[in-house]
Amino acid sequence: MPENVSISQRENYEPSQFSEFLWWLSTAEKELLVDSVVDRNRFKIVGMTVLTTWLFATLAWTYFFSTIIDNAFLFVALGTFMGFIILTIDRALIKGITKFNKNRFTPLLFRGLLALTIGVFMAQPAILYMFNKEIKLQTSLDNEKKKIQKREELDAVYKIRKTELAEQKTTLQNELNKKYTDVSKARDNYIAETDGSGGTGKIGIKDIALAKKKEYEKLDTEYQALAAADQPKLNTIEKERQTIDDNIKKEELLFTNYFNDGFLTRIEALNNLIKSNPALQFRYYLLVIILMLIELMPVIAKTLLPSGSYDEKVRLREEMEKEIAYSNMKKEQELKEMYNAMAKTNDEEAITAFFSITKEDKSEKIKAFSKRWRDEKHETFDGLWSKMKKEILSKQEN
Image 1 (cartoon, rainbow, N blue to C red):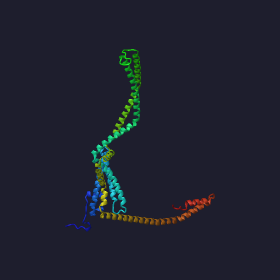
Image 2 (image 1 turned 90 degrees about the vertical axis):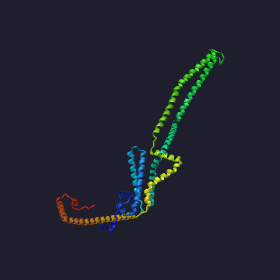
Image 3 (image 1 turned 135 degrees about the horizontal axis):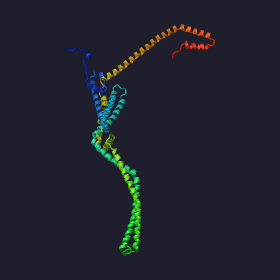
Image 4 (image 1 turned 90 degrees about the horizontal axis):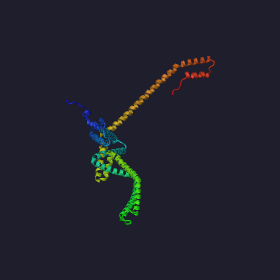
């Protein structure tokens, strides 16, 4: 025979664990949602959007940390942690979206701006992953430009000194060249005089030839002395110029070692790629909008889906809990006040009895004080009064 179930208990819906998980993601209260047939699927939809955003945020942040951290365990843990933070923010955002909010526009605007900011940032790692090959190529080009710019900056730093060294070298070289020209001219005159091709036209060593020979030898000696004096200077200049070139190469090498494919470097390459590639701009902004909408899905879904009986139950339940809390506090206050009143009555009776019982004892003690004062002639009345106040009279309670 079928069991006779009361009308109020004929339908007993038991959600699956996955449904309960989706409801938790959508910040719904299971006890109130079980009996709301239509709202069950609505909150499942909201929960699915939160789940999708959570997974997307975890993957995006994990890839972001993988670009700056080499330890796989560490960047996976950090990506999971940041994904959990996004989940917490999304749950907080959709929890505050209800049809009963008196001021819905301002909170919704704030939530939209927050979700927009998070969505734009989360879109960056995903886009970097999609355009990985193009970004690597652009990064290489950017690094070459940076090398050229660095070389220009280094040349500008050493330009003044290199110009000074070049001028000094030119001066010394011109001086040597001029002296060498004079030596060559004297040598040619001497040879022409000896072979008869020039000068007097007489062949052989004569007085004029000997004079030209002495002139040539004198100039050659001066040239050798000048060369011996200027060559160390030229060597010093050349050594300093070589040192400057070596420093420039060393600085360039150190600068090259700083090159990397980190997140900011890739973002910079992406921006340069977008500027130089109009065909990519439209697709880039389209992807940003799509990925941003993924982050906005929970807020959009909670805002667009109509409100059902669940929200009404939440409102009524919250009002009931407020009334019960107020009633409980009121009862607690009344009980405390009654306790205080009865305690006051009992304390008054105890105090009355205390003073009534000790009245005769006080009189006896006063008589004892008076007798002692009478017997002791040297004690003043004021001294007796001070003792009476200290040991017999009552003190007011503070």
